[in-house]
Image (tube, rainbow, N blue to C red):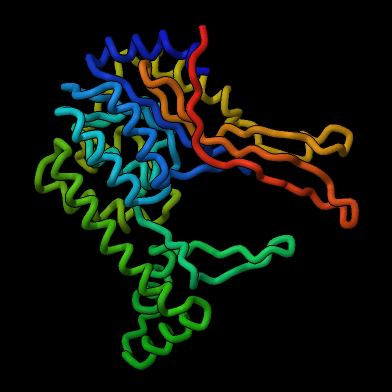
Length: 329
């Protein structure tokens, strides 16, 4: 809880000579949560309390989410400060990495990782698969589509335009043409956003194209992780290594949050049931915190029960969204 982290938040602000914001999205198995557009309102509330500051540090742990939400968050925070940095205790991937591109610097621990920002699309026309009787739309990765087409041209050495056209048309039998159009539009958009944000990052101008190309397609896989050394020496990003005192504070904050969110333990709703009776639950899935602004937490709440006719688990979700928590002494 925030009350247990406040002293370390104060230490971090002193060490960085800044105002601190903390943003964590859960990557707990079966309770994964993404960066989304609904973060802007709670962030505004925290920033209005902080008011204008010379420097703001964002402590962030996230595996990513909506690209435009990341873009909007960078612009929002920068409107409140002159100097903006992120502090990465562990995972800062995809859209979270994009946030880092819009900072003056990225403070990375030895276990911290960044990741590619090649997007996946999740439109209404995406293909579906059936899981346990429910149709689930499949995200389409820009790089998976590129990989399919590049394989035809580079690995299979197909150069005939008619054959390449047939290969593309074959792809449209599985992925709707409008979804494919969305994929390529997203790729152009993410490159544009990355280039704009890198103008705010303290990076040599000649490294901008190298960074954008690598993060958007050059890594070969969205799961690729970029450690501190590669980010600094090969990509030329402005990376800062924390000293021992700072590292210890960062680690303690992260471990406290990891424990609160049970990040290492899969969320298994069956285990919450009390002798098969309906059981209420409240699942913490993201937080936005600051010393003076308190805690905004993204919650999923509801009642779990077993369907008597088919013995399947019912999740009657009664609330899902952000709630503000007030500290009580």
